[in-house]
Image (cartoon, rainbow, N blue to C red):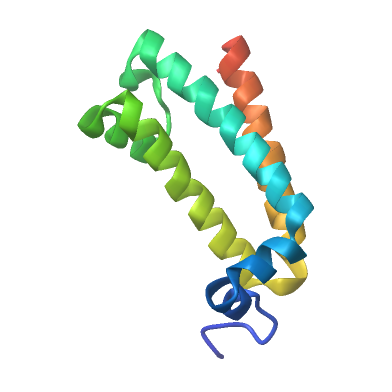
Length: 117
């Protein structure tokens, strides 16, 4: 069993990232909008209540070690990079994974904004 699936977008992502962005423009936009909303609401809540309220352990560590101003954006960029890598791994699912994660980020930002969790 090969480590990389037969149908993958990893070569396009690494060799010609501009073409990857062009091919998945809308799903990447949905991901970006959701991630930015989640970043802002997470940043706002951690500034108000402190890093100890964050349930994601890596996000909490980044915020405790680097401070909220640096920790939240760097952790969110790492999360998004991981989402893009996983989505690119399986070509047939790439747009769906990007879109779903964007929707989940949006849901998280709504939860943060209204203090649902």
